[in-house]
Image 1 (cartoon, rainbow, N blue to C red):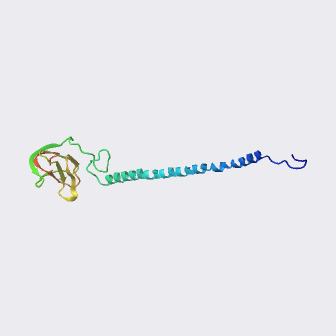
Image 2: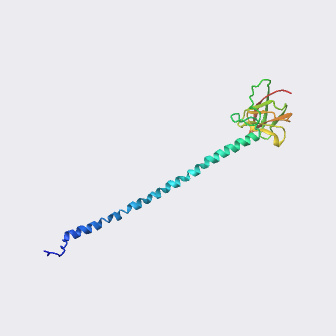
Image 3: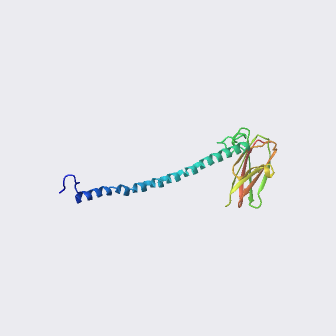
Length: 189
């Protein structure tokens, strides 16, 4: 019992209770909320910033624009009918004034046949080949120089005769041996 002026002695239970409120400092142990700072790890969303790599779309655009520009600078005999270039319009093998010449012969990979056609610049010109045997067939159309090859081992070849070209050479090519039919549509000269 305490006297008048003396402070009351704390009972043991309240000391423990007071200490328990110090244990409420376990909120400091709730420091795993700091570990939830792995939201910084979720900064891996920043790594998903490799969307910058998706800037390859920029590359694709640049390539397409550059390629389109190249096509515009170098007429390609009208093969890009869907993408107009600075060259003449695309050729169809049914234009008015075209005549058809058919040549049947045989050739092998080592002995291709070449035919000469007198032409006028700006005229349409078509050459197509079908062949037998086990090989593939194509035509090469040129003005006779390595810088003047307009189609190389393909079928069909459809071009407008370039300026300054009075003669076209058509070579029947195969990867094997066999008989073929070469069909040429042109305006005779």
